[in-house]
Amino acid sequence: MIEVEQLTKRYGPTTAVRDLSFTVRPGRVTGFLGPNGAGKTTTLRMLLGLVEPSGGTATVDGRGFRERPRGLRHVGALLDALDVHGGRSARAHLHALARSNRIPKGRVDEVLAEVGLTGSAARRRIGTFSLGMKQRLGIGAALLGNPPVLMFDEPLNGLDPEGVLWVRDLFRSLAREGRTVFVSSHLMSEMEHTADELVVIGRGELIAAESLAGFAARGTAPTVTVRSPDAGRLAAVLTAQGAAVTPDDEETLRVRGASAVRIGELAHEHRFLLWELSPQTASLETAFMELTADSVEYAAGETR
Image 1 (spheres, rainbow, N blue to C red):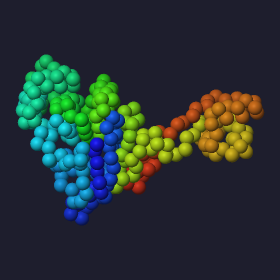
Image 2 (tube, one colour):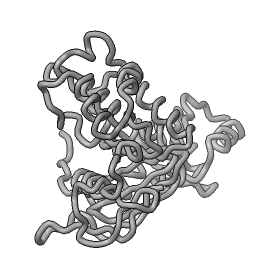
Image 3 (cartoon, rainbow, N blue to C red):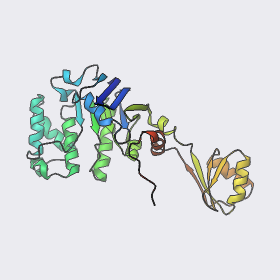
Image 4 (tube, rainbow, N blue to C red):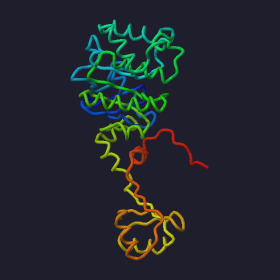
């Protein structure tokens, strides 16, 4: 397990992380979400011993990462795919990591094959790689020691659609093997497809730590979009039934407090023609935007 207890990090007068506590359990993919500047990367760096906390603890399986002499056997991590020596080949880079962590050399070729960097790609200098190829190499480095715990910071940046699907399947496969998978990302659509649990922070403080479905349900109540030439009369009927109705235009209504099935029954009962009846379920993106609204440091203005 990853355990964070009352973790705090200050940089002079600025508090990047404040009294943060959460647990990440094995056997599932846990998404780590928050607006830019929320403290996600700082938290990951404290977990990996790269930044000294001002207070609190950040441990993996009850121990700090610095206490492990061959860390890649216990925790694999990708924080910055660009933070790598551009003059080395992919194979040489992984060989150096394997040697320093006493990992068998044969594991290097296994990992290169797993991330799709075989043949000439394995021999190329990393400086010639695209961002997507560097992401694959970084993921390979995290997998090198076959660790039970994996942490990734924005691992999908630069990947093409095939790469995104591959990473999604990889993370879920690792979780099914009983590993702890902790993924920081700003891509809500990918988290909806990948994560089982969420840890959400804003301005360095915890907003939520719960299941993805539970968090998404905390957003605006689900609505039903209805289009009808009888929209005005239908709105009156729905309002009389206790639903909240908001007209979008002369033919379109957004309805809360009544299911699509109930709206269809009422339309049939009163002989109203329907052109559209579309339930809009709760989404992770909507819940995230609503619950982190006060934590956004740089909000854009309205679009024209």
